[in-house]
Amino acid sequence: NLLPGCSRTQTVNLTNKSDATVNLMLRAEAAEQDKMSSEQQVLVHQLISKYAVMEIRQGNTVLYQGPADGNQEEKGWSMKQNISLGTFQPGETKRLVVTLSLDPQMDNRYQKLKGKVNWIFTAEGTEASENRGDEKSDGETLNGGGSNKKSTVSEKKTTVGVLSPKTGDSTDIFPELI
Figure 1 (cartoon, one colour):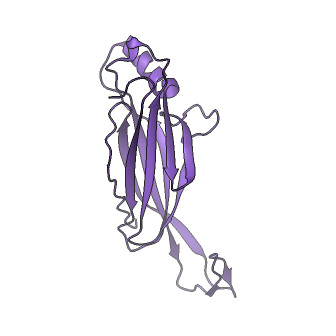
Figure 2: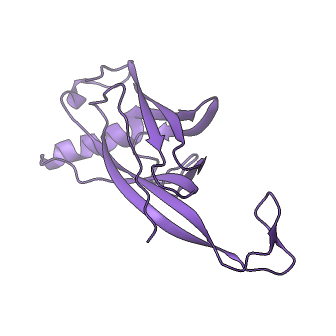
């Protein structure tokens, strides 16, 4: 559990365990909360949309900084739409560092509450046609040839608990061509 004014950091390792190169994306959506009174539901909504602030970094790059609910209202940075986590070669692992901080202005009404947010990881691969022609390094086809088709290869939903972070978590992505 976190106390007002405190922060916790969690490392999430993402691995492409397929044979295909994929573009990995992340978005957030509302999660079903535990059973609680309507007053507690209002407090949980305030907790994850106002008082709990999250930062997601990949190396020195900040991918998201804002409310822990992913800023579903889309004022400023938002995870309501996919954010890119980059291109992953087969077998490649990248590390996300997630920091969750609680506003020091929170009062005792928020004690023992747990808010949840769903993180949706989507892996999208490129499926090339048989008649490819010559390809430039940026993927553009020259000399006629076929076209590249993008297809979703995998989607994984992970529920994140706002007040119960664990350090050293490892999340694997298992893309499979559909």
